[in-house]
Structure formats: C-alpha cells, structure tokens
Image: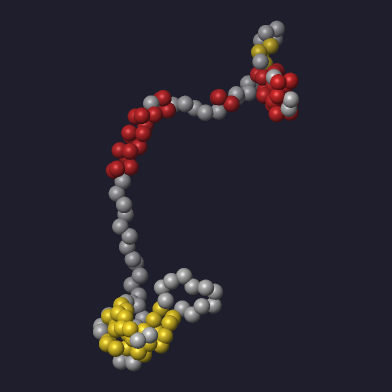
Length: 138
C-alpha cells in the first residue's frame, strides 16, 4: 500500500489504525484495548444508520409532505409611530424629491428643488426639467 502511492505519509494513519484495531489472537484483544481500555471506533462506526436512512424515497416523500403543511407567518408592523409630515408641505411651491436608487459616496439623497404644479393629499405633480412627473407621498 505504501509503495504503490509513493507518499507513505498519507497512508500512514490508515496503517496505524489497522494495526491498533486488529485482534491479537494470542492475547484475545487489540492493542488499543490494552492501551486505552476500550476498542477504537472505526470511521464506519461514527454514524448511526437508522431505519429512515434505508428508505430514501419515503424520507423524501415525508419531507415534501411536511414542507407542504408549513404555513408562512404574516408579517406585522408593530410601529405605531406616524410618518412625519411637515405642515408647510400642503402649501409649498417647491419640493425636494428623494432619489430611490443606488448612490455613489457623498451623492445627495434628494434631487431638486422642483416646482410643484399640483398638490394633492398624497399625490404631487412636479415639474422636473420641463416635464410633469407624479410623485406619491407617504
């Protein structure tokens, strides 16, 4: 085994594990039992295979059935605080409009001031570079 690979250092742990777990027939135990007082667990013994693992199709069906039974929770906003609205917003002639895009560092958060063409309760008609635009105010 060592001579076939040329890199005996990679297979040395496997060989040592084999030597420590092999049964010494003349004394009736392994060298690991003499050293540690109990047998070593082999890599295949680290995992406990249950009955569910032997039936992967049924396991997948049970998982799909369980996932179909899940109901999403409705999100609730617990914030009772009203949005701040300045009293002069209903009578102003010019407004700044928030830019909802990715900004470069130190780029202004708002564009404007723009001339207000029509004031509504929540909808504003604003002149942006000679063209009318509608903006919704929350």
